[in-house]
Image (cartoon, rainbow, N blue to C red; front, top):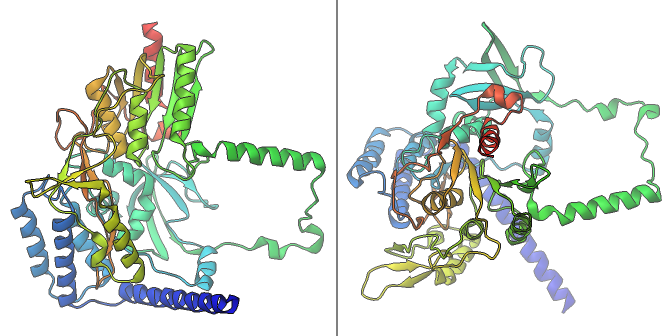
Length: 524
């Protein structure tokens, strides 16, 4: 029996390994070869058909006739073979034309062997050598990843490869959408991910020419891929690091630190190793509290625990002013968003509107491969999320937040300030729109990246275009806040508009937070 299990396991391992090798070869081949006009046209049709079948808000912001014309025109315009990257640049703006921030076409990444990964890990391409930030529609060098004499933090980038930053921004923001007519989300994405977007649209370069501005002077610099120096191999035996065995006190301290770190991991960590969930009092009298919720979804998250602890502290201290920081919160769990709202209101509420879809679309039946078949099978049984409506050719979606719910025990009734910006998106926009409609609150910052009238999300499958290998990430279900619609297609507007600039960023100033603290001081 044990031998049979061993042989079966060996066979399955070989099948998976062979499948992985074939997948890598297929994807890499798709990325490099030119695709025939016929195959390109088939992928265009596939994309539009999936949008029409699965995306419940495909015509929220664009007329069907207009979108039909765009897809037909693209097919007519393509009369010669294209690579996947060339095709991506043409098709991605059409997917973005539906103006859904949860729906985007993406370039697949090349799959490398273990040996290739090791070689690449030693290289730093010209985009990776610099960190970038976007403020006031300008691109700045915000950091250097190795020593560069001719570039300094704070230099403004005017052009890359002779192309103006304005043109580059236009090209990059054409391949993805904001919700509706939102004015802040795209630049918020650029601010977070300029280098990644540039690589996706222009490819990963081995050499780049930058035009930089510092003060009144303009200078030019070329960067090329470099290899990290392996200093450890050059050390003499006498200079090599000697690892000492830690003593008992050090071991105890390390064990305690590890235990503390594990106990706090439910609050998460961002890219700067700062907690995603944070709560603290800002004064000795505990009259001002600060709560940061930078994500509604991350590994090991325990939102219920964080909310219970934080709002009990507020109730015990009888705190008068709460500053809720939702900046850079790109969304996540609908339930985590709704549960936070239940601590910020003192009466029963509906969080989202009842919503319907015309059909139960299973995205994975259109995909090849055993893993997609498993997903399709699982998705079939996940139809509990919807109930067929008698007498109607539609299905009612059963999302958390549709039914009326009571507020939490320690709900907060004091003064509430909410910080928002262009990356306050998806589930974050849902809580912001509900707060705006149902509670006295002062919003400070910039327009949220997510629309005030809701989004199409709920489930976001990734579909692979059969011939080019491009990836279509697509929202499926309409999720709308239980409010009267206002500012259709725009985000939640702040009551006090404040936009930080690069100097604020470089000097670690927080003008939005400073305004709130001054406002509290003036009122007391």
